[in-house]
Length: 203
Image (spheres, one colour):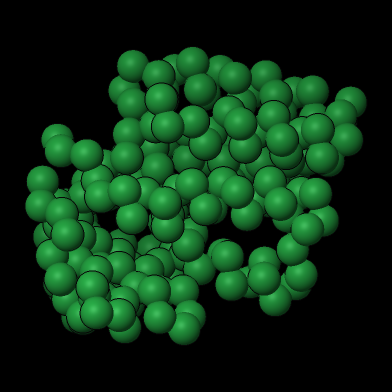
């Protein structure tokens, strides 16, 4: 697979990592935090038996296949020691672990299904979705993907662990089906001279 455009990697990965670390340091205002979160929560657009649908979901890049078992093991170990660390120490170690370009596959996003309605029915029927990122006032990317559903495997475990880090650290383990979004095309839909639907990547 060809490398993704640098402009897109900067937008969805590097600046996301930088903003999380800055947030941990207390360097972002509440409004800035909300704005930066748009890099993580695209609209997932699908079509199929449930009709034309758009749903906001949190996504992130997946580890390369060879790195996945080690990353899962490391996150489990980190979670087991969370109570003995400060929030800042825990988050810095976590971010360093999962925002490593050397181990992440920048052609594959992952996310969880929690609602089991329109997106769930459409993706299982068609295996396709578009991720539409938008950060006001101008930046937007349309990412067309093939989609696989995972249950009970390494990708499923990894994405549920990420959810547990933020949402269920003390109340058990989440067990949601996982999506693997394989990037096929990226269009720059930003309101800039370089945007307005320009194809910037094709697998």
